[in-house]
Length: 289
Image 1 (cartoon, helix red, strand yellow):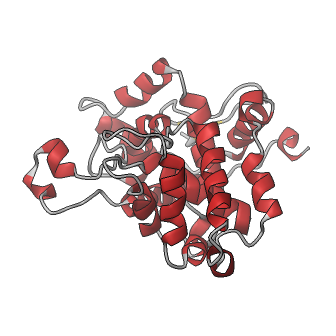
Image 2 (cartoon, one colour):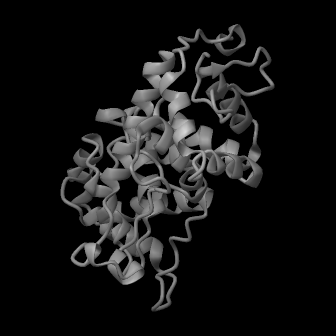
């Protein structure tokens, strides 16, 4: 049986052999159309800022203290669209989160170069900008959006940064287990500042956070294994948008994907993936228009 069950209609999605949303070019085109015509996601403030300031985060500009204000505008633009609540300083109170985050980013040595090099540890540093908070989701979005705006659609070397948010994290376990052979069947990519304090597990005793690199590398493996099956390499940006838009607010879709990796069905779902015939797909005519 072929790995992907294709739809002939531009209004219906392709599904993989287990009946879960497939990572195809046609599905990406469907989602891009929906997002592009959704007024809630047309905020272009960050794009405008980066066009006005193509040397954003350069060493030269960061030597000028006024550039920190530009960085703060970028932080605010990303927060506004993504509702990451970066303004809050956390348990100690206060609403200077934007300013403190911008200062943290501006103080990071060679931050622009590290963005271009796709340095995964940069995410962890930005996530620690606010004392008492570990704003992992915001940090992934800042690195992803800014690197794409500065260096092109793929963001930087290695295909750019992968975004973390709660919707993608809930959809991720199916793709991680079935496509990438992730050993933790319920892995969601969660990162916290002090996992030992949260989970009281001794194996986390001396760790300050779960590293973003694991999450980033896992999505890279999913992308690679999918490409082997269908001949299409989905970008990290399209992977994020596809899962996020398809699954947001859709509890039944998430429930189905989780059921397929339940203890009773996980082996079968993985076996279906391994044994399915490759489906080297050609984009539909309407995708190319």
